[in-house]
Image (tube, rainbow, N blue to C red; front, side, top):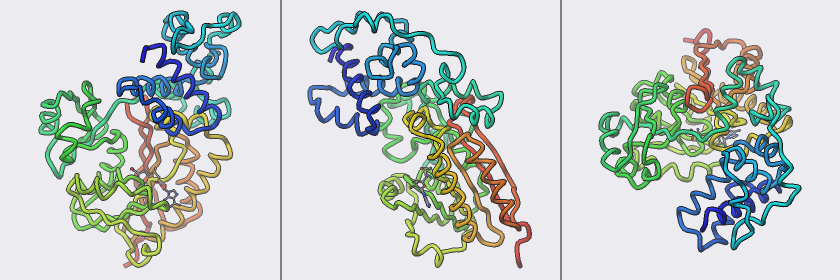
Length: 392
Ligand SMILES: C[S@@+](CC[C@H](N)C(=O)[O-])C[C@H]1O[C@@H](n2cnc3c(N)ncnc32)[C@H](O)[C@@H]1O
């Protein structure tokens, strides 16, 4: 495909996304219809789509329209490249620009438009992040770095770096967690690399690793990962101590890849259905990596930034309240309840913990920590709750 044909493909996919189709579904649909596209074309088209989605608002302003053409036009103006070289109408390129398109478009207004945050969310964003708001919003406009977690059960950090380098993947340590590496070169080779295939490294954001590193895991503990999803945190916990880990998710299908991931990592993790939780408890540690807006990870999943609204946020907060109430009954008297989100919004973080403590006497906040995107990780929050007076 020519560069212009890739832009035309991105335009069509963006129009589908704007019409309501999920981004991944729109990309998969295009891939299936476009057998002629090679792997480099697929990567380039995907990059166009995601780069635009991170900056949908400011690119719509620059391009003069919130549709596929307007957004790609905005992207080209932002990059300082001449749109006339791509919008030529020749072969598979986008149709030539109309006079209206040539004259449309303006610099985005400073504030939420230029920073690509929806207006309704901006007050909450600034209230949550205060002086970090602008830097964090800017971080969400760019691609996320690729972070790896070194699986301490299989080797140490220098060994992992050496092995990755042998496969052409250069890394540096990331300060957020002792197991965290950031890829500086060769990210696309990762899945074929020996270090990845043998489970020495896993893909995981550094702040996500830091959430697990903050847990006081000790050999022999019985641990429940209540919102296990793909099992990223369960696997990270398994690599830190000889703990017995139970993985649960309200949607068990989300854990379908966990057995294969655990086998690769050399970890033992038991999936547990809701019906068996009561009998299996109480647990020394319950982690709830709760469903959330994902606002700390919108660089990776930018669609969420534009799909979230007030009602959706309130619904998520309601689910978080329920989860906290439910899991508090599963924690041993001298155990720990760890709450985490990949959100930077106060309502989902400190707000939830304050509400829980107010409504549940006998619990206290032992640890509270937040990571924000301006330090090169996803935005994450964690709180550790313990009982005030463990019964004897
Ligand atoms: C943030 S994701 C978990 C990510 C995962 N811990 C990881 O590190 O890869 C949240 C998960 O919570 C699950 N979930 C949503 N509501 C739930 C509930 N009421 N009880 C348990 N899990 C729930 C979702 O299905 C989703 O997989």
